[in-house]
Image 1 (cartoon, rainbow, N blue to C red):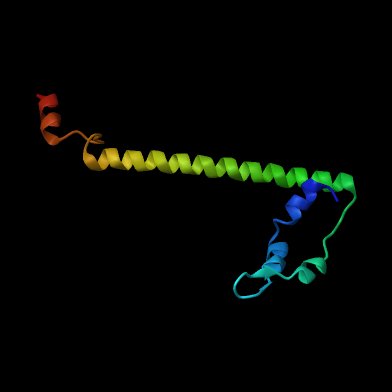
Image 2 (cartoon, rainbow, N blue to C red):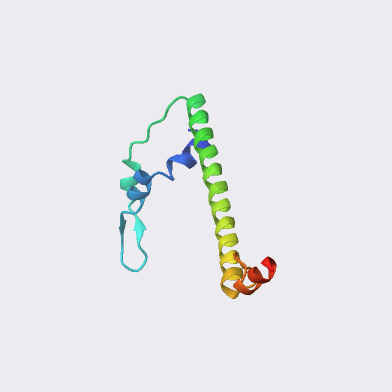
Length: 102
């Protein structure tokens, strides 16, 4: 099994649920018999590479979108701060508007 494919398999909900079955109270441990009985589909190596590549590309895209979202959230927060403190005004005060018409 290719390591890139295995990396993607161990990130699946199904694998994580199986790995989360623990025993012990002081130091919970995964029940390895559950993991060893878990059936994992193993396509041919070229298909494993293709699957791992697509999933890796999707992970990278999600990461980029999350970073962009965080950046936009920071920009919004900064704009709200500027607007709420009055450092930036969206409309001119009425006195300035009257003076401009005179």
